[in-house]
Image (cartoon, rainbow, N blue to C red; front, side, top):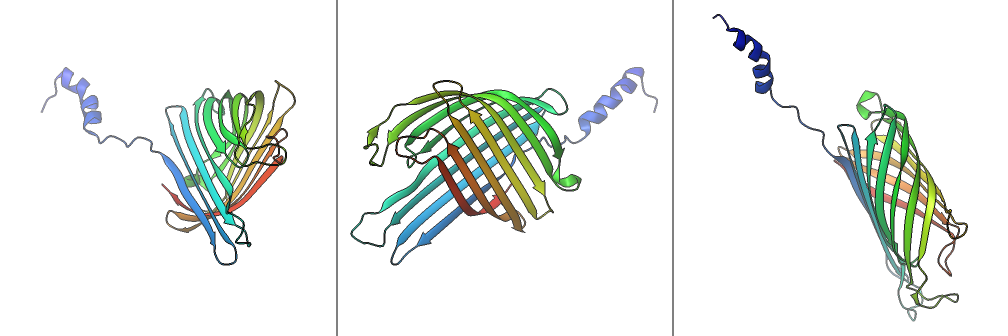
Length: 262
């Protein structure tokens, strides 16, 4: 059959229209939880959970993460009341825009609470630039990712002394504002399809209202058990040179979790 000129011109477009649409990019991430329960002469319950998700599409990289922890213990002496040893949560959203093959500009915001550290809530926002040194996908021979950030963060800490100490009685504490340049690092390496290492770190140096340094580090090793289920061990360090009255400068946490990827 002879095609008219119009039909010949429209044929490629019609073929594209009839072709099945490619699925769009989806979110990927992981959800994990861990628990420790001791009973008998001493009673201790500690629970923690974490979730993270990411999506990359159209030059944008969207990411979110959240964590939570709760711990309560009763001393060996039954005469003493149970004590809260952990009660905190964090949440953060981040958007990166690629402006070159290895360069992004980003904005992020988040909130935290930590009653044991006398932090009623912390709200923060940040803008800056990131450099993607390495970005090899898992299906290209094993994941290898390295990104560094430089930004400026504004933080507002609302403080409250939940548990009285010799230095500070229970009650309201002065709030703290800070503007700090931030240097950050995110690294992921897949030893194999089953084993992966994650390293995150950041340093903030306050430039207002006196000297204050904050350093955070997370080291995590995960091993896939089967399909989407993995077992992870993590170690976290959080340092604050100017904590709330009566609080120590450094907190550490060693944890183990079961995780489900999606």
